[in-house]
Amino acid sequence: MFSRVLVANRGEIAVRVIRALHELGVEAVAVYSTADRDSYHLELADHTVCVGPPPAAESYLRIPSIVAAAETTGCEALHPGYGFLAENPAFVRACEESGIVFIGPPADVMERMGDKVRAKEELRAAGVPLVPGSDGTVDRAEIRAIAHELGFPVLLKAAAGGGGKGMRTVLSEDELEGAFAAASAEADAAFGDGSLYLEKALVPARHVEIQVLCDAEGGVLTLGERECSIQRRHQKLIEETPSPALDDATREAMESTVERACSAIGYRNAGTFEFLLEPDGSFHFIEVNCRLQVEHPVTELVTGVDIVREQIRVAAGEQLTETGRAPRRGHAIEIRINAEDPSQGFAPAPGTLTRFRPPLGAGVRVDTAVRDCSEIPPYYDSLIAKLVITDQTRPLALARAIRALRELEVEGVPTTRELALDVLASLPFASGEYTTSTLAELVGLVPSLAG
Ligand code: MV4
Image (cartoon, rainbow, N blue to C red; front, side, top):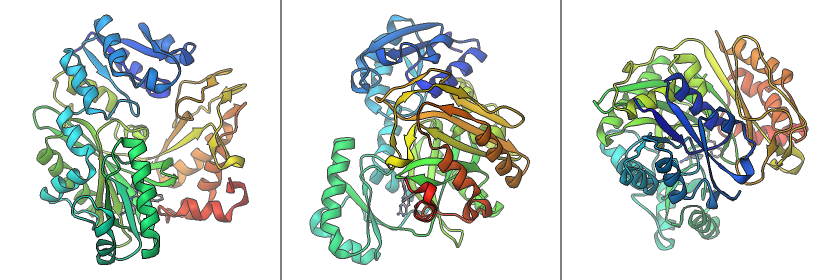
């Protein structure tokens, strides 16, 4: 096992990783920009290194500074968290060239799966059902013919990155030209590559992702699904497990498909395979996330597996504690509390928290790095805290989630708390009958969601 690991992130995920390291008896080195000099994750760390000024591009994203921080403090390994450099193959290579173990998949796996077109090709070869779409990237000349072949609506997606950046829904042929230009420009800005591919837009559908862990001896543990359909502009707001839409047979089919895919692509460490689930129970692969996800705690609460601890153990060359299908019990729901202003279309609302008091009580976990008087800086994501609630059944977990959300005290910045409460109390969510379109429909119907 390592004796000292660098945590190349900030906020709640840095706190989460430092806790896992300390429970393993491993020292944690934290990095920070000057905007984060008073952050909580620095108080928990054994050593801290300032890596630059506030802009992420000059601090958390600056590969030489992060690698140097690991080298100069004698770290054997580095955990990237999520976001920032977590899915950057060049960063993984820079770590490895410096003899620092990257806690995550190897660079070549990350590279292949980061090319969304290549990922689909490799997974198709592994027998994974895909969303119908173009064979490879598309250019302006051929897009019309392929779109007609697929049938509208279609989706334009960025080949060089996922998460909805550079994604455009096209309802009819006359929108194609404009959508192509906009999507390509956004993809180029986000990923430095404007290449696009086309997919049949599956509507209605649900976004269901499978969590997996793989060790170096070929051991694979699948940890069930997370339902992530409640998203606003491709930012997840509420996630839950198990999905109300999955029956045991479909769940097993998805997990065995992922297990097979991991062996085929040589996956290592933690990963998430995203699917779209249609009303008839068919599921279609959309992309792989080669990192720990924000919403990993819901899976931890129902399986009892500490995913971050397993990541660290696997990176240190140990075998997974268990393989096959992780046993599960109960229901878990995560609500993201973001500093975003509903009256301004949920635009980020940085500022100072004048009061923060998390809910407590049975089945309530709060992953956060904020406290009274914390600054929410404008430079990074707007996440304040994740309320992760568990209980024996979905109705009980839902009631507990509403109770916890009401108990939360957060003042000084506008947040998504009221939006989350409205969603949890809505009929589509309470019934479990919701899709990727539900939040947009609710925002249209419920004035307080008008945002
Ligand atoms: C789709 C889709 C429907 N059809 N692809 C969203 C971001 C990225 N993870 C993939 N996403 C989707 N891909 C096809 N072919 C629906 C989503 C999607 C979604 C789309 C619009 C609005 C909200 C959404 C929430 C989850 C998934």
